[in-house]
Amino acid sequence: MSNTVIYSTRHGETEFNIQYILCGRLDIPLTAKGIQQAHVLAESLVGKGIDVIYCSDLSRAVATADIIGEKLGIAPIPDARLEETDFGAMEKRSRNDPEYQQRSRSFARRFPGGGESILQSAHRVYGFLDEIICKHKGQTVLLVSHGWTNKMIASYFRDMTNEEFGRFVLPNCECARYEI
Image (cartoon, rainbow, N blue to C red; front, side, top):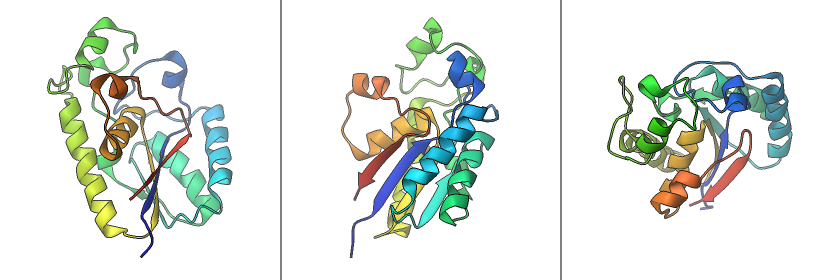
């Protein structure tokens, strides 16, 4: 049996990405550039042998996945477990906000205002990965999600120090490849 390959990407650009603002679970659309990024990514994935596409159910990820899926002839499957980390009351704040910076290094502490902790977010994403790896043995899977979700995915597949985890960024519509 061949290896399972997982490609993971982040949705196309949004206004909050441009402004360096936390979006979290807020449902905002792609910019024109974000739509273009998704089309370029779709072209780059032709011939990669992708069998299935999963995406976050937030509209920016769904829109990106739909563009890719249309190009590849695959209907994306939305799954809430790929949603962005819930930043609670921190959403709409600058990523440079000192409180956000401090809280993003406290893995077990929930973001204020009903948010989730980094550990809760990792638990959600790791459970999803465990499931799709079993379900799609020997296949090539594309995941379309978010910035923090991609941090979780990267940490699932490779050892990372807290500092490496904190610095990890997958730019909009770039892909990481993991092989099992």
